[in-house]
Length: 425
Image 1 (tube, rainbow, N blue to C red):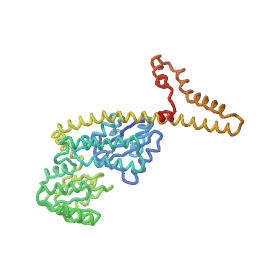
Image 2 (tube, one colour):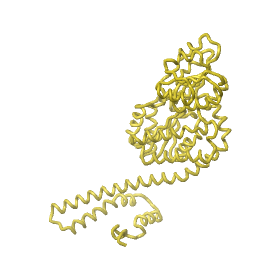
Image 3 (cartoon, rainbow, N blue to C red):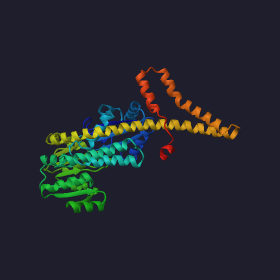
Image 4 (cartoon, helix red, strand yellow):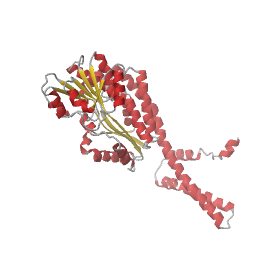
């Protein structure tokens, strides 16, 4: 039994590559089921965020499993992702997932959304039985590690989200006070944008979405004016800044739409796209008077953020090292239990066949019970010992190794008693 990770993240690929890897229903199910159809992949969890696409797998043979998963990914997304793809196994995979859940691998170190995204990935696979006794304990442990890091360090203090970084970036280029701000999207990211915007004083906030009831509730909380998507073109004409943060699988703000909005006006229009996949056509950056920023542009802020939190990050690394040492043993025990389960199944299969044979002998012959039991017990012993004896005779082994194995097998010479006798004592 193995654990492996195949990933394309902001550390290895531009955001537009990760954007094209986003799986929405039912493609996500189709992708997982295709992986699970492979002989050496028994469990799958997909973790996708605005700056990562990660695949966690477990199964029988590690090398074949990783090879099968890699082929599925290249066939699905194209050979071009191979240059961005990182593959790890066992300890490196555990350590990486713990760092992810602790937000040490995030673009914005300390951001809190990743825990919910890890939990969502686990729930998606768990409810569909795509994951099991290896990946589920691993992800549950990762969630526990992430919570411990946030409790025992100050890694998440202050503004540590993609939304807050995007807000700071926009403010640097187009100060946010007394501006008309359009917000497209009312999810978690949109809520953070609206919350941070309130800290920049009085602004006109226009919120655009698809669901009237949700829009009204959102605007009551954040003091905004609600509009549907049909009004986006009109609202853009006199807007100063637009933040877009939906989960729509296609572009919502086109180059033509933006070009029409800025035609004949003098003030700049700042567009900030923090959606996955992208909401805004990147070609808008070619329009005069338009400033366009995407998640890719947050890398500089990410570096500044990490430098400011280096001490807390070091504390988090120590927690991860501690948790890794403890969980490693548990995972190794899973390997042991898997092999022991296979051994038990093997012996049980022999027992059942011999029992059926003995019962058949009793029913179809005049043999007495004693002789049938004698034959069955000898046959059981011979079949259970056969493979071991053949291997021991054909494979060179030191006297010490052989003595150790035989003593373990024999319980140091103590013949085990029936459980009924042990109970009576």
